[in-house]
Amino acid sequence: MASLETVLKNNVNLADYGPGLVAVFVGGTSGIGEVTARALVRDTVSPRVYLVGRNEKQASKIIEELRQVNPNGQINFVHCDAARLKSVDEACKTIQDKEDKVNLLFMTAGILTTKGPDETDEGLDKKISLHYYSRMRFLTNLVPQLTKAGLATEASSTATQPGLYRNLSRVVSVLEAGGEAPLILDDLSLKKNYSLRNCAKHAITMTSLSMEHLSSMYPTTSFVHAYPGVVKTGLMRDFGAITRTAMSALFVLARPWMVPLDESGERHLYAATSPRFPPRASKDVERAAPGSDGTKGSGAYLLHWDGSDNGNKKPLQELRKNDTGKLVWEHTLGVFESICGKSTTP
Image (tube, rainbow, N blue to C red; front, side, top):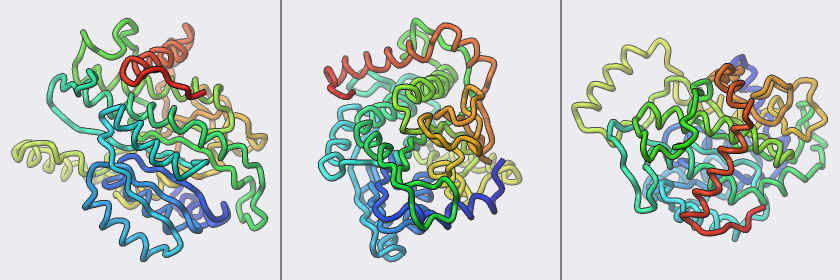
């Protein structure tokens, strides 16, 4: 567990990374993505930040406020319907035209729904697309930029935290680490076995397995799957009035166990920047957190809301026996190719 004091100490020292950190926030115009972006802009030197989402009006308001907080920061909005992979490709192209490196890819875009299957014109259910496929599409598209950031090995000469380097390269997906479960291996996209429960479990488990697999493919980038705890965000916006009222009542009852939104932003900024979660290639693993497989500094981390290890070990151990992470990733690339065509991404 990371105390709030530890979290804030890490965040206030982010200037040690030096100027020009590049951060992409998918879902950065509301909720956890927004508050984490605000905290990063506040604590870094001349950052270049991309808020990816659909709400340009809300983004404009956030950008205006952030420019007051950090006049030297460059904050941009990138429009994207993140449920559609082709829209993801367009958003990534916009970022790649401006940046040759990306230090942080932070993804929270999602939906809370009681509907059954709700397919986009690309043939993917909207919920599983937002929670898994589109996030992995952002990741694969931006791998060259993340890799370049991870290969910059110059240490900061003014660092107040040992092990803090300019070569931050990290991917964070905020979903539900710890909720892993067995998979329906012959129907990973849930074309035949869709239910909200199956959708949640598949998105969660495939995220954890993919990040573990990717940590060995891209050893200079670290991968974090985080469970945020109970945080009141804007996910209820798509519900009707009656359902929103009922959910609000549940939030009142859950208040003693809830994580305040601003604290959640600080804790997720910690997950996104702390040297405790280094990439696999890092030589500084003495103080590293346990990775998803129990190995310190493995490069893939499953985190609870408080920064502690939170993987559901039993199902993951069973899935590893058959190298299911590789199978899931090959399936994912196959879905991408069927919708977007053959990729040249390494």
